[in-house]
Amino acid sequence: MKVSLLLSIILGISFHTSTVVGFSTTPSSQSLTSLISTHQSEIATLKDIASSISSDEAVAPKDDIFYLRYVLNDYDDEDDRIAALKSNIEWRAGDGNNIVTSARSAIRSAMEGDKFDNTPIQSAAPNGKLIFQYLSPLNAMTTSLPSTNELVYCIRAGKIDDNALMDAVTVDQMVDFFLYSKEVNAAISDMRSIETDSLLKLITCNDLKGVKLVGGSKDFRKALSEASKTANTLYPSLNGRTLMLNLPSLLGALVKLFTPLFPAAVNERLKFAKGPLANVEDLTEIAIGGKGRDVFVKEVDSLAYD
Image 1 (cartoon, rainbow, N blue to C red):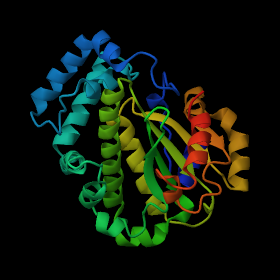
Image 2 (cartoon, helix red, strand yellow; image 1 turned 60 degrees about the vertical axis):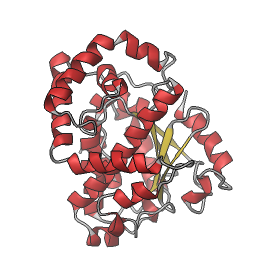
Image 3 (cartoon, one colour; image 1 turned 60 degrees about the horizontal axis):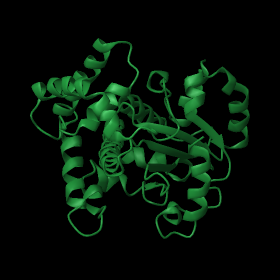
Image 4 (cartoon, rainbow, N blue to C red; image 1 turned 30 degrees about the vertical axis):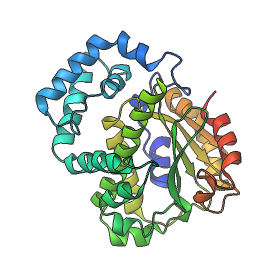
């Protein structure tokens, strides 16, 4: 069994090396304005292709940064890049239409007041009423790093009652929920990139403390894996470093044994560490104003960028 498949089965995480070629752990030193200017012709071509498929701005966004991420992603050739864009726009216009339109509308509602209100985003999440009974800020949340303004998505699989969760929803419903969350994070990352004039990415923290190597829901792992695989094609040049934190002893031993066999691109994207979140009771402690935020931000800063 390949190591990537082994860890995918154990953790419910898929590793796809094609999405991490040319991966950088730090925001681009070149300004977003400069990147867009440099690649304006390529962006215009991709934008024309997308607009020929749909005039709906939620499906084919007007912002140049959406297409810049395709330009900067490493595809086999230009035909492959165009095929990826067409496939993704067609998904956004078809099977994923409710996901992307709901996410974009919810973000607009969340930004209407003087302060960002997450309530509309939660309310619009597909199957949210069922899923939020098991996924909450105690075990899954998105925050940000003040040093770069990049979003950080944190999940604590060992704190989720995945069997009860998957009794309440199907694999497809869970996948839709994860893709909605990714669309929200992607859209907000693009907006923050424009505000900061820097191409921002999404950092992921997988806190594996308490994860059981035997048992748990196979359907939940399947949903995580399918959502990861789909999101990697839908959101090129979005993923930053993935931090695998506080691994159980046995899993830590497996990682030490097999990590040298990972492709270099996978090793570059992943970082295994103990410390961040280890002493955090629930994830609300790392939100802005939380008692554990300062320590968390400092530790993640040191791991996410080098």
